[in-house]
Image (cartoon, rainbow, N blue to C red; front, top):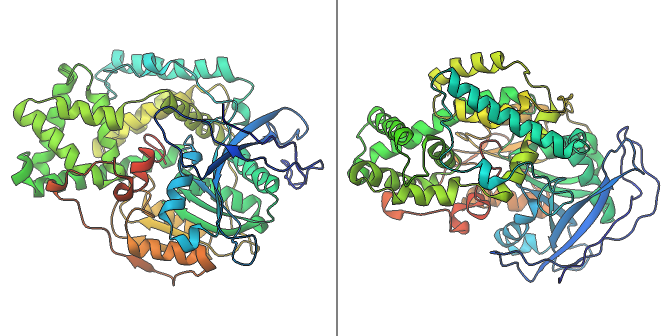
Length: 523
């Protein structure tokens, strides 16, 4: 099959749940050729391996699971020029870090990337890691058009509630042995197991979105094992996780209105209204019409929600989305809506795996309301001020009200004097991880330095902003940090004539290489 996997037995230096070290033999990671994946062409420079870790760190000699890794090796020898291991994570929870490795390696300046072993990993339960969690048949569960996420009456709400409860029940039936151990804390301990298996005393880390929270938990648990740490688009570590979703709904509403205002400014191109109020009316009129007659028989209001949520992550898709919307409204042409849904909104087996892990981690990390009356009251109130995402986001997370494993107590993220200063990168109008949450992360780590970009995209580094990327490269190169209150200008807004899609990863950044960093809707 062309793949050689390295199986690492329990290793010396891996911490258990109480912070003590595990005794045992340490086998080297065995790197080999990566397996061929249909539809993807892997770089010849990529190597793959697996590491065994405890399912339960309270029982380190008990059942083991496998974490899949890949890497692009440094081009310099392991001397003073070699900077060690840079672990990368794109967020989620539920996204594959192995999809990010090559992008980071080719996007960083060569004098930086060639000095690191850049390693991506699929967190427990994700992708090529074993087990890889799936709960339902995606072809059936995601069959379009799905019920409208904004319920019109009790009967529709009841049907949506049954759908959420059914997903939770099915995951519990299939994965009762695994779900109790699916937490951010355990993923952080898996990271330390990877570090130990690689024979590294310290590691560097680049995390996006939810990956910033994972990095913060790692830094809290293992401050002496951090060499360099970068957080791009930071999660609020104090809002895990129900409160974070409510705040996110408001942030997506703000970003959606920015998109509507942009469309209005380009009325000559799209003819959807010359003011934000007019384009908002046109958007929700389209949504109502799709409820009665889905575009192409597949794009109903929920499919529209999923697709246009991507516009909250990156303005690179705005021209294409506005053109599809305009063609539908003005010419009755459904092809554009179907095309952007197929490219940005449609879900497959990999998406269902990501969704299962997203729920598994978030529902287990922290406590969620178990009474649906609490959810309903919160969503009804918030929907009045933030109609764009409130109900879609609620149903995305609703299985947590029925999750077979109760939520626990999240790690209290905090700084240690042993943790070195690190770098944060953030956009001011980020919808997925709002700026106020990044400020809370910075308060949790007072020695961190933040660079604020004036735009609203999510995952802002390595996406074409030379100012931001310069700070990232300088820090990864030699630890240089910016002064406090450092800002970078946003990239120019897209123009209607560009019609740029996320198919160009060099221009669209992480949205292009991963689709959406963490799936919909959370980071």
